[in-house]
Length: 191
Image 1 (cartoon, helix red, strand yellow):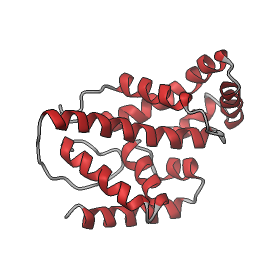
Image 2 (cartoon, rainbow, N blue to C red):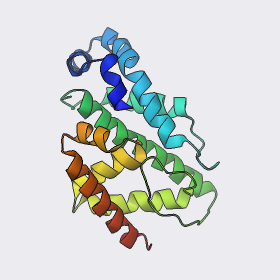
Image 3 (cartoon, rainbow, N blue to C red):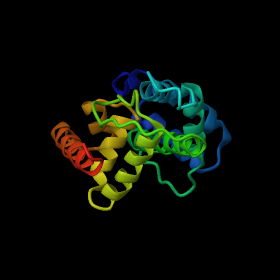
Image 4 (cartoon, rainbow, N blue to C red):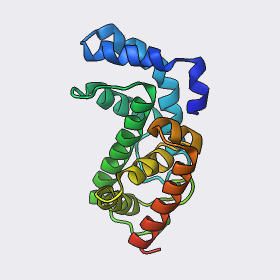
């Protein structure tokens, strides 16, 4: 996924485009989209693969909505590609949860499922997605980095190496944080 991106763009290229975008250069928006679209699409596809019918957004819709939100952030001092993709993971989480909340308000379901391997949100009910998000908000007050790891692994479907790159931490730290966050969430969500 992200490991395939260096052939398409360098960290410096993305950083320059993000800076140009912050400076209000409209051409940077189009050039940045061309550079990051394949990676964002892969992230969204991994997240939406095998989704329950309750999630009504498709890969293209999720990518476009996330990208538009990302480039509208006014007070962000982008630090490069990894920072951008970390923000993309958070943004995709928010979009999916917002869609789930909207849908759940219309129709209630109460299935129970645990947090498992990366990108495996398949079969998660809308109510469960909201429960996970609420638990992550509580966890964020205690262990913000754990939440960032969950966003990258669970909501963006990144592997250990990609998560380490995005967050700027070691593979071992990602593995440990992922294990600890899942254990905390399992207790918090009741199994």
